[in-house]
Image (tube, rainbow, N blue to C red; front, side, top):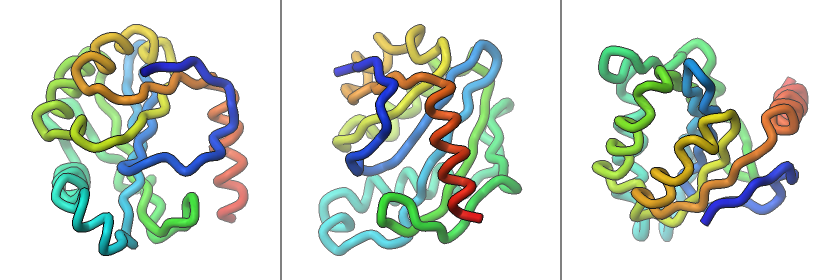
Length: 157
């Protein structure tokens, strides 16, 4: 279920769209909140997607250490042909096991989705994530991913 990748992300992945950089000190999470769900998406995955949206967007703090960087949000943008908001969340790497448990508790693993991950923690936490969440864990090269992200942001401006 996992793969090491330096590839360019070409195919549109399933929802929800999450990206994560797991560093030695901080975990940085990016979540794309869809604003244009289709009727079919609402019917098949709506409840869980709404659960995710509510949890991630109704708070600016998560526990004692997690923070949603409201000032960094990109609102009403086009990404992969879809319209939505990009949210940026960070928390200490020491809380990663709690995050994995929270994802399991909130039933994120019941959706067919994949997470693109960078950083040393992408390797360190891979086994636990794949076993507990049953997801496709795509490890990506950090520098390649950074360059693709900067390229995307420059196109927005």
